[in-house]
Amino acid sequence: MSGRGPDGVSIPRPQAGQNPQHLLATLLGEYFDSPEADLPSAAVVAMLREFGISEASARSALSRLIRRGLIATRRVGRQSTYHITPQTIASHRAYMHRFLTFGAEPPPWTGDWTVVAFSLPEPGQAHRHHVRKTLGALGFVRLYDSVWIKPGREPQAPRQAMSAILADVERARWSVMCAQFDEESGPHGPAAAYDLDCLATAYRAFIDQYSGVRDAVHAGEVDTAQAFVVRTSVMDSWRSLVLIDPDLPEHLLPAPWPRQHARETFLDIHAALGPLAEARLVEVATPYWPAAASWVNHFRLAKDSSLGISGGTRDA
View 1 (cartoon, one colour):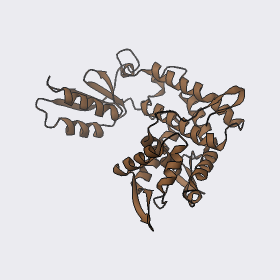
View 2 (spheres, one colour):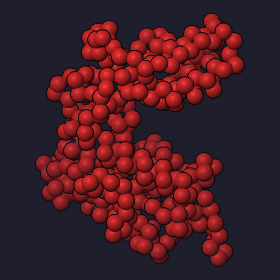
View 3 (cartoon, helix red, strand yellow):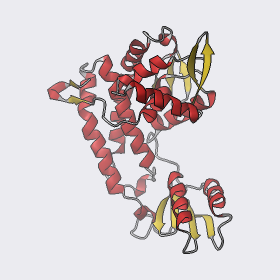
């Protein structure tokens, strides 16, 4: 499923070693938005086959998403079918809204940072690892060994997390506070905790990878089969950047900051390939699921950035 665009530009193809469970969750979030859709397992296998995923791996991914509660089963006649739970749909909408609107506007800034400081007894290595992993998942980074920070005033989540982890740990001490730094951008300020050069390099790599693809899209060089794979590839790549970008205020970012160029590249490809990717998904699923065209649609970015559904096409 490879292809060539203008001037021999390479069109992304399925990558070996993709996580089938992660890929299936992405596809469900991108193209399905109703708990009433009864999805046969054979259609799921056909969808994932487009990415080089074997039938055994596809069915294993389906089973894992069931165990996670993201999808559920029900009987339609003699056949078991699968449907996305309402809770999963709500979660997918929120995530898609975040990924498609990220970077659209500078974050509001009051100068506040949420700070977590902790002290653990020497034998507490396992708890220390747990704390660090949890704080990282909440968007915190380490300023000093046991001092972690995050831009904005959001003390509730880290307070609950620290209490849950350390409440029964003898001699453990921790504090959650909101603070302002006298010197935000200097070598001893909070901005020094972030590897912004590495993040800028990642954004530029994204631009380099997809600028040619963007040209190929505009030249009409991407067919429906390629569009399905390319649109998923660009979303996964963009999502990875969103998840590691702390979204610092503009005055803390080195200039020129490449995120806006990367964002425009992503949105252009994602929006332009939406109808083609949707058509390909309907094409591969219909032999196993005749009602596919009635249920498959795709997310796109609405001008007002509101979240809703219009004409079978979802706006994020």
